[in-house]
Length: 230
Ligand code: SAM
Image (cartoon, rainbow, N blue to C red; front, side):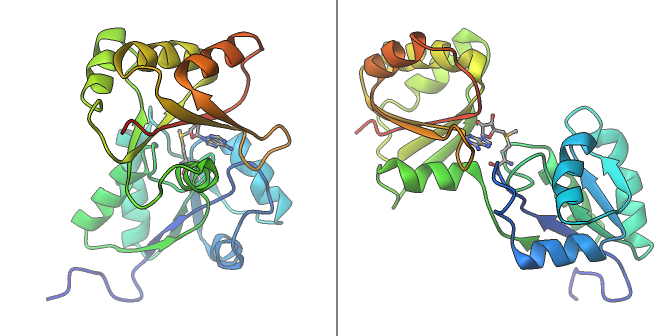
């Protein structure tokens, strides 16, 4: 027996949205968002900017790290009642470094049909622009915040042959670069900042060079760090 619900049951659409440039959205994503009964998003104010831009006016439900446990049963119930729910995140592909996967898991457990609408994600945009090997890569999400756990994680990657990719927040960038230098060494790395946006920048150098470069300026924006250890 198939595990997916058949019509007229609802559906969960996982819709990728831009990571900065509002033009980076697929025709199909716009169509699906226009036809959805409900859009689940992280920050409703942030998503409204994109949705207004495309003339999409649908009920929004906030679904983020702090609410997902509470909100999941309600969204699942809506889909089981035949609603088409589109899940988007603040930027990029829902489920990549955000709580989206929990809703997907709950949908699977409930036999709900799930469709992914592929599109932007910072991890892939950073990888292809980096110039580092793309044939094999390891996406590590955000490095742990606590220094002990961060060092342990980095030490575990010391022999990694694949390109390693981290997301990083501006206020932890220097700490992470210093931790990379101390654990892995003065490794070649790439830092992709504000991809697809006005202040897009791709830094290529070593850990020490990056520390020097970024400690001399105000650190603003969104960052992806990519390292190639071996
Ligand atoms: N779901 C998103 C995706 O598919 O890329 C990622 C969500 S995660 C909570 C946010 C992190 O992604 C940021 O802290 C940053 O590391 C990275 N990121 C998102 N947009 C970016 C951009 N335009 N340039 C560089 N990094 C970006």
